[in-house]
Image (cartoon, rainbow, N blue to C red; front, side, top):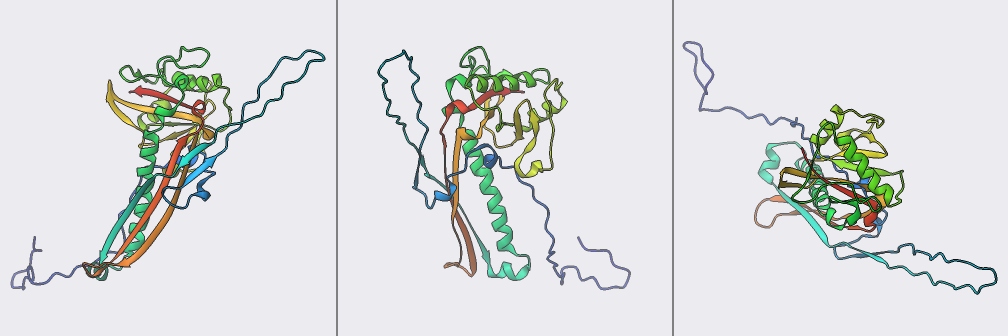
Amino acid sequence: MAYPNAAGSVSYSGTFIPEIWSKKLIAKFYDASVLSAISNTDYEGEVKAQGDKVQIRTIPTLAINDYQSGQTLTNQRPSSNNVELLIDKGKYWSAIVDDVQDVQSDIGLMDMWANDASEQMKIAVDTEVLGGLVADIAAENKGATAGRISGNLNLGVTGTPVQITKATIIDKILEMGQALDEQNRPESGRFLVIPYWATTMLKGSDLKDASLTGDGTSPLRNGRIGMVDRFTVYTSNNLRKVVDTGNCFDFIGGVTNGLTFASQLVKTEQLRAESTFGDIMRGLQVYGFKVVDPESLVAGYFYK
């Protein structure tokens, strides 16, 4: 639409309107990544390329025997199975900046896109890992009859999820903690990942003897919102969502030694495009994850 002109003035609409390319960008915000906070990443330095295998040694279980005075002792030769972490997954990104486009804008397009690709990669990997954990969690730590000893903790199962309300959310979190307790898992270093709607419920609930306390770490970086019972609570938009009885979501908790995750950005490169005038920037990230201690993780299957 042309600007109005005073009587007798010449209208330049349709003749020439210069374009100004701003150096300022609209802010972009990303889903928080929680993997580094909820998993064991000790083996990342050993990953070099997709297809690598990392052999993880486990601690053997020693037998305890009865003793009577003067008896001959039986010696055990401790042995344990190695856990194999296969780096069998990979994701890439590739983008081209045409020479003409680069001339039109003095924004550092390559750097900007590389930063965006890094954040999008975290989201994609988070979503895949969080969605693939539940199947490998110990049967006693999920489902309608959870609890290795009690067997009466209803944490929800496909077809019969558990409804969460402001009145019940604390109880269900405490039951997830009890499932870990019955597996003799450490009280320190526990985590819980919940969707944002559950975070809203939690903040509006009667926290009773539990506490929801934050710290100086921004939830935009890793989703940390505080502590409830013995869990450090994280919130994420990357948890698995299932259309069951309404929209159902996984709540995932545990201690960090339950999940091993390794990732490596193995290649970033910039090269000239062959079919056009421009530069290509691309990157390859390889990763793998494995539930190495199923009893150290717990899952709830809940809906709002």
